[in-house]
Length: 172
Image (cartoon, rainbow, N blue to C red):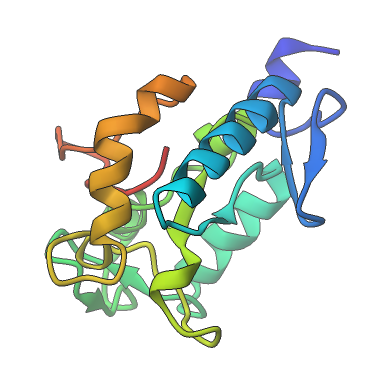
């Protein structure tokens, strides 16, 4: 196994399956399951939106955004039309919320996007927008729970503040 291939989404041989369509490193799966049980004990039904993403999956997301088949959002989390943008301006707009293929933390098998399944109806489409995790949003209680407890299970929330470049995101 090549570390470079693992980190860029070209090698998933070290990953194990979780909940049929998700894959993680074995130690991350175990930590997530412990965290999921603790959340359940506190009345939160922790569920995955996304986990490992291969280079090809990230490239499909990027292509769909670049061609206008998937929405692109600005810092105010308003959907924008990127079709009139040229060159780097278009790329920069997508980079605000989506890493370039080969540069996503989701390639590592360690990063997760989560939501509280009990807080929404079964047909709810999670957008992973900050507003969903802020006061008044359906996942505010989860966000507060994660703020207090995610580190206990070994999880880091790298995008809790906009530090320039990547916008604030709710994942772990």
